[in-house]
Length: 422
Ligand SMILES: Nc1nc2c(c(=O)[nH]1)N[C@H]1C(S)=C(S)[C@@H](COP(=O)(O)OP(=O)(O)OC[C@H]3O[C@@H](n4cnc5c(N)ncnc54)[C@H](O)[C@@H]3O)O[C@H]1N2
Ligand code: MOO
Image (cartoon, rainbow, N blue to C red; front, top):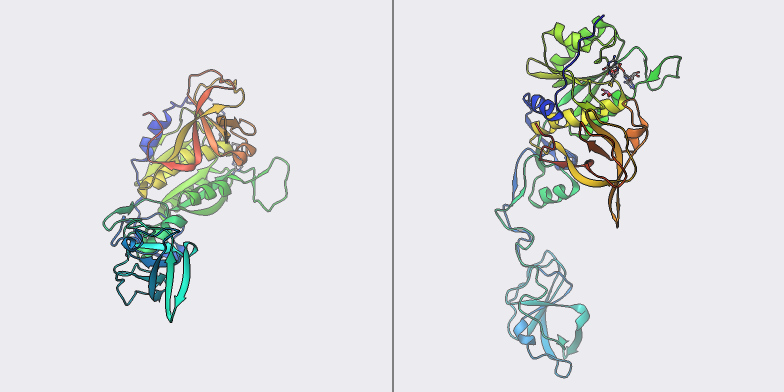
């Protein structure tokens, strides 16, 4: 049997081809209490100033700065306290010359006041029945006043659509009265793990068999990307079984991921299944390692991701291709952010293809260091668990040594800029 040699394309070209088939996602509304980690589908523009009024940042006394101009230790100034207001209350009276209002943090600055003195620098005195305060220092106009709009001004663009809803974003949405939030519908991504060797995770090991880790890993990756993974089960390496499963599922889900069965082995049926279905293969080889056999096909505008069965390769296929596919459709940052770091130990392997080394980034006073994790093989599971980044070693390079500066892609930070050359 002669196995057809596949023609590898660059990672950048693979990403471009995948992005030609965006998901068709509608906008839906969710209660703010359940919006964490969803992706915003509308811009949020400030429809009022924050804070909406000048307010006191301290518990103390609102006063007229000019009344304190000559105050000193030797010659304190006495002011008459005419009212007391807490947060949420508005003073009934205007402060006139020689007057002050006792004010709590968050309360609106009374009319006439131009500064606030904290309790700590004031001596409270009582003369007759009138409450008074004594000040031994002067205040400037505007001192200790949190100005209306100092946090954000009406009309400011606060959060753009495509932003992932974090606790901080929720604080802004709440401030502007969004009890319901417009978010993108989560794309429903069907997942099959293929392989006769696969056991369910609750089964005891048997000779020649392994537990299916890919399905749960890729489901978790999809959830991290804002999608809704639907695990459809594992499939034996049988053409007809896999054909029927892929055919019926792609009609139901927004996209389908299979893991395994995409290489050139006797039981690697996925590429033939795509052909038999009449799907258009976008590529079946990428110049990257792991994950070189990642195959993607399109059927009626929907994508079939044939990710590798090898766990590290499956993980890489998910992060490099499925991530931009999902996030770009939601107008969110589709790529992992790239930075530079110093390699902490030798990595002597040559790199015929771009190599994505699972690794860990460490920030030290001397700089940012990156260390490969676990076994550097497509089959490694441990390397993924310990990693928080990929080192990206360009194709066509020889080994790298400790101290070399390398590109690193961080799992924890998304970016809008495409890190790949096309
Ligand atoms: N003659 C060639 N052989 C291979 C080539 C090649 O170019 N020529 N490519 C190799 C590379 S590179 C990779 S990567 C693998 C990819 O193979 P498949 O993606 O078709 O995956 P399988 O053969 O089904 O499985 C590979 C490996 O992964 C284990 N596996 C599969 N599914 C799971 C799962 N759900 N959870 C955990 N582990 C899984 C499976 O048991 C195999 O050990 O092909 C090389 N061969
Ligand atoms: O697809 Mo394989 O993971 O390149 O090594």
